[in-house]
Amino acid sequence: MEIIIKGASEEFARELVALAAQHHAELSISTVKPGWTVDRAERYLRDLTAGARTMAEMVIVEGDGYLDADHLRRVVGALNGPANSLKRAVDRGVRKGWWPEGTPRPVTPVSNPDNPSWHQNIAYRMDQELLPVFREALTRIVAGKAAAEAMGITPGGPGKTTVAMPMSSFFRGADPAFTGIDLDGGPLPADGDQDEEGQQP
Image 1: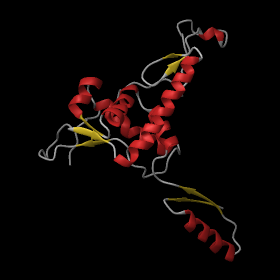
Image 2 (image 1 turned 90 degrees about the horizontal axis):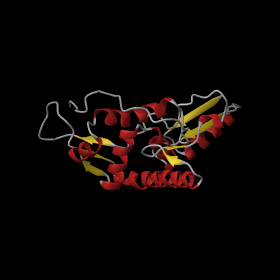
Image 3 (image 1 turned 135 degrees about the horizontal axis):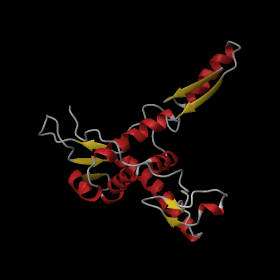
C-alpha cells in the first residue's frame, strides 16, 4: 500500500508509519511538499507560451513583483492569451504531477478596487517570497541558453533555443524546410487562449 501525503510535515509521516507498524501493516509513504521550488519554477517558466513567459519575466525582473498592466500591454500586446496561459500552466503542472494540487499561481492579476463590474486588470503581481525562487529559475534558464550558444546553438525565440543545422544531419528523410530543433522541451505553443482577461468578482 502506498499513501501520498500532501501538505503534511515529515514528522507526521513518520508518526503514521509508526502507527501502521503497531498494527503490522507495511506502508510506503511519499510526502509531497506544497509551494514553489526552483526546479518547479524553472519547469513552469519553460512550459509557458512565448508571450506568457515574457509577461512573467517582466513582472519578476522589471516590476520586482508588481507591474502595471498597461505597460505589459505596450510590450506584450493583448494580455488575454498570455494571462490565461500563466494560469493554465499551473493547472497543467498539477495534471502532469509536476507540483501538488493547490499550488498557487505565481503571477496573479490585480483588479481595480474602484470598479466592481467587469473590467480589465490594472496590474500583475508576484508575492515577494517567490521572487528569489523565480529569479534563480530564470538564472538557470539564461545559463543553459548561454551554454547552448557556446556550443553553436542559436536562440529560437524568447527563452528558447534551436540548433541551426539541417534536420537531415540527424536522420534521413527529414522535411527540408525544417532548419532546427528545440532544446528546451519542445516548441513554444502560440498564445491562442482568447478568454477574457478581465475578471468578474
